[in-house]
Image (cartoon, protein in one colour):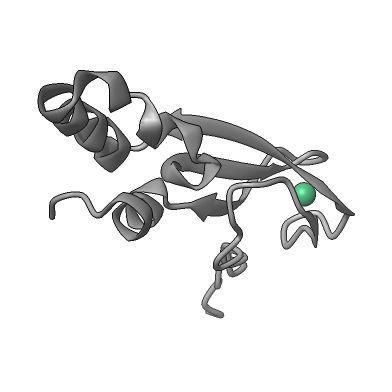
Length: 99
Ligand SMILES: [Zn+2]
């Protein structure tokens, strides 16, 4: 009896960044701009809380950097996730932050 191998799931695009970008979808093979949704990253909230205690007027600074948000890129045609931008790594790079 032949073994049924499920089709390989396309890999996520590495280093996709926080902004919309043009790509060829690995799922449906359509080419177009990604649709993005963003959320506050955990490290971004942590840095903001730290700044709130250190110097209250600068608590908003981590929210000024688009790179500090977690961003999910989806294909506009098939709605599959094609890439994820990690806001935690960017926040640590830009603002320092704790481990
Ligand atoms: Zn697609």
